[in-house]
Length: 352
Image (cartoon, rainbow, N blue to C red; front, side, top):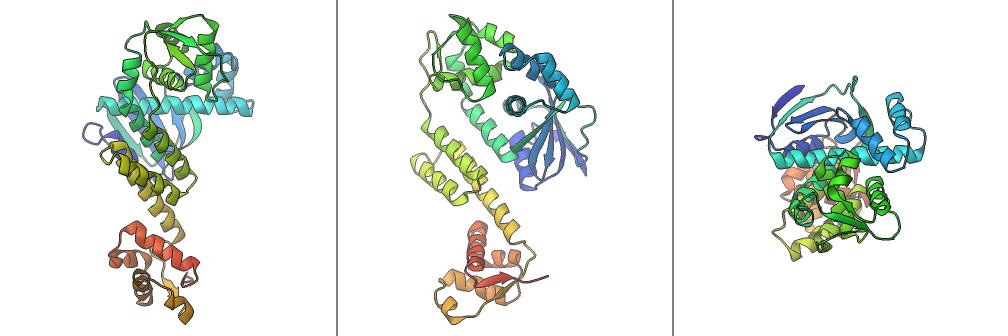
């Protein structure tokens, strides 16, 4: 199945969330005035990204930052054989940064076109393998969009002068390259840094903002941005989500909700946690699966009323999806209840 549309009528975050929730496999082509990107998906996860000139951009950053020779990088990318684990990690970090910057810019533009096809053929595209959950791409791009005004306040024009601080080198390759380039000069204007890297201004500005907030760079004439505790906690929650610690991630959300119930980032994170938890539970208990009941009295006596209701519906021969629908509970709560009963040995999945 293939379809296409306008990003002004079907916003990019909603499109990506739908592809994630549907666990789609195929290729998404995004085009807008500032460029184009392709995302290759497998089960809702980005497994590769492609764009015109991608190899050159990556090689240039690694070359000017004295990480790897640019010619070596381009050759390795074209051959599909990166020469070391360090080069592979650096290339993937830059490809992911390029992709996140593009999604952020496209979301902000609220324009452009998309084309989806279930044919994941990469053809002659300049592509780089990735392992990025779509939910992470959506979350990170919305976070960057929310903080874009802070970046503009710190860096209102390209004449702002950057200075390095003598600290441990950053772990992210783009941050490390920027810190190294700034350290070579006593003072480096943002415009010169931007031209040296050959990356979009929004990507460079965001990286400088992160480095300044982390205390690794200073911007002359500007106060360093303060750490955003909400953003920091959301990042911790995103890590927990990637590690599939759903209850812990939900606890982060509840804490944030109490502090600022109107924050859009918090609401988006909450929906993401619940959607991922539901998907994981359905992988454990398929919607069409039917459950048998262990009627041992000592097990039945310890059940709460809502758990007894789930057991009764299982006895009636309903499949998992029907039990969830008939329970009257939130989907995630009903599924968690069923999964708990299976772990306790009260219910078990019937053999097909």
